[in-house]
Image (cartoon, rainbow, N blue to C red; front, side):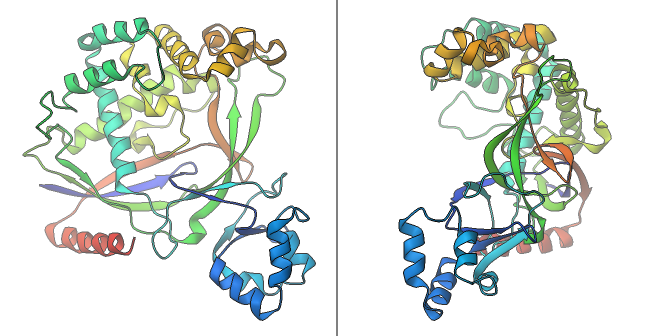
Amino acid sequence: MKCYKGIIKTMGPVFVGDGGRLEKSDYVLNINNKMMYVMDIFKMFQGLKKLGKLEAYEDFMLNNRYSDLYSFIKDNELLNDYADWAKYSYYVDFNMKQRGTQISTCIKDAYNKPYIPGSSIKGALRNAILNAELITNNRKYSAMALQVKNETYRNRKGYLAGVANSIEKKAGFMDDDKDKLYSKFTGIRVSDSSPLSEKDIIMCAKLDTLPMHTDAKKRERQLPALRECIKPNTTIEFTLEIDEKFCDYSLKDIENSIGLMYNNTYDKFLSAYSLERVSTKLNPLYIGGGVGYQSKTVTYSLFDDKDEAVEAVSVILDNVDSKKQNSNRKNGGKNGDKMGNHLMDPDLFGVSPHMRKCTLYRNTNYDFGLCSVKFEPIGWLSHFQGFFGIVEHNLCT
């Protein structure tokens, strides 16, 4: 058994959602001090009751006289009280153009401290290893690449499921025998990260960016979707265990896989956006949600030729879109906008999808989920100390 301390340094905001959303009645966004206060409903109820404001709050909930909770707080002279009712709070870097917007919440422990689940880290490592296998042994999977190109779309659920399973079985990530649970990845175990501080949370808007060489008048489009994220330049620690009895991959193999996948993604996708290539010495890895198609799939690694890969991705994305959007795009998109059609991606942009998933923080454009990862060997004593700390954290969550 090999044990390592994993150290993640966020190079961009990382979003790992818990499935929850904050509505306008759940938070107070104070644009004067740029602070976000997420309310503890019980504390707020008790405070409003004590101050005789329950009837006014009921009116706020039932009617649309206020655009958000801050307006209600201000009108009812509660500016000196509401901060004590917050479950947690954090700094917000920008002023939202639209009040009362839904906000997707990040995963937190029982003490409202954000962390990254081991499953998210392991999923990113697993995807990197699988992509590296396809890049290194491309000819071995040529028949499956052809199957992807010729797959007929019938329904979203079954589309490409068969070939995806075939790829994983051939790579040893899935066993042919349904009664056996063993795969090459069984021997890799990843803990949840250590809990962070609520000060490490920021709010990010989704920002779609077109490639730099396009003639579009506006290359960036901010979407009305907000997320709680872990801010850039945050250090996050976790534990990685490699059981050599079950796992064929060493730490060096994992690090090489991360570098192979990143370079392949850069050459076939990221280079279209005139981004500077990140050194593979930093082990650049995309973790969490909202990172984009190219970071969650293997299509760009399955095809050795870039143009062939872009063509295949454009067809896949066109197929999996909703029928309404498909019908609209086949007519040239809204008002004849050809950029709405994924089938036009290869000709118009030379890359697909043609939108890069990023965000703006402190006037700097960042990719969602981009991290640097490094590993340090740990001895048995520090390993068990870390293990029991993680167990305590998991019991709390």
